[in-house]
Amino acid sequence: MNQLPSRDPAAPGADQSWPWWPLLPLYPYGRRRTLVRELIPGQVWSFEQLQGVFYVAVPIRMTVVRVRGGLLLYAPVPPTGEVRAALAELEHRYGPVCTIVLPTSSGLEHKLPVPAMARAFPAAQVWVTPRQWSFPLPLPLAWLGFPAQRTRVLFEQGLPHADELHWLPLGPLDLGLGTFMEAACLHRASGCLLLTDALVAISEQPPELFDADPTPLLFHARDRGDAPLLDTPDCRRRGWQRLVLFASYLRPDHLQVPGIRELLAGLLAAGVRSPRAYFGLYPFRWQEGWQAEFRSLVPGPEAALLVAPVLERLVFPRCRAALVTWIRTLAGQSEIRWLVPAHYDAPVACSPQQLGELADCLEGRDWAPDRGSWAYLSGIDKTLLRFGVVPEQPAEPGPGFLD
Ligand SMILES: [Fe+2]
Image (spheres, rainbow, N blue to C red):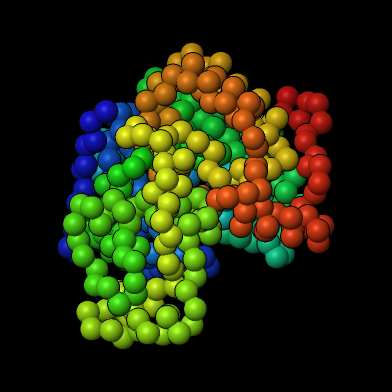
């Protein structure tokens, strides 16, 4: 698939400000570059931004689909001036943004931009998955900024563009604090299956989004806090692979946190006295074997299709059957050619047969293990279980929930 960059993510003067960032204070905070790529000519576009903590940043994606009557936005990203300008270009060619979809009930990073995006397109219909929730207070959607007059609930109040799109729900699954639910969307004309969080595809090379500013990669490529940030292809790749391990396992098996003396020794060293290098703060010490740990996640040069470990161990540890059943339902859609998840790589060539093989693999292997790379996530899950925050047996919907 040719990548068709239509917009320089580092374009000078582009309005990349996102004033609502304190609601979810993640890197890169108030300034969000956007990379716009045409995934399927004239039909599907990707709008990618970075998002993370302490430079552990991975792409988050809004997918724009051309439908009869205009454009559909799946999983909105913060609507900076740059995003709105790129959407205005598409509207000029293909018609107005007519539909905005929040395809998850739990993904806060996807939920927060929706009210601002809805305000940017006051004529668009907003659709959300059932069982929306907020924490710590259970607030109604209108209080969270969703426009009550034009917000509808997927499956319960209909489905948008059902003659062109096929909607495939995963869940609702009881998480204790709230409910997990995701609505996959198959765009029949292009064969693109839009996904949110449940499946991702991860490559061994960093995404194009980092080309404009590889600082997060270079930061994590180092072995010490007092080492300068060097920009080489090898540093970018090493930094990316470590960053993937962080994002996947939160605390990878081959990572140690140095003692306070070693930590302080690197502070304010020559070459790192800048906020870009966190003034030498680097609370990580990578152990030999981290490359093999990455290879167990991404075995080869092709993008690896997987359930993100952090989801497997913290969201789906007791929901494998529901997840596998959903993937088998996806595998039953003969039109699927591409996967377009809301994080990491896209589009990823994928056949129904490959999805069937993934379901077989997930069913046949050890699920949500406790040891090695999974130990830290497992510890979190067990603590949540012990305090009764998450249920031992998640409730699944009764018959007829989505009829
Ligand atoms: Fe997400």
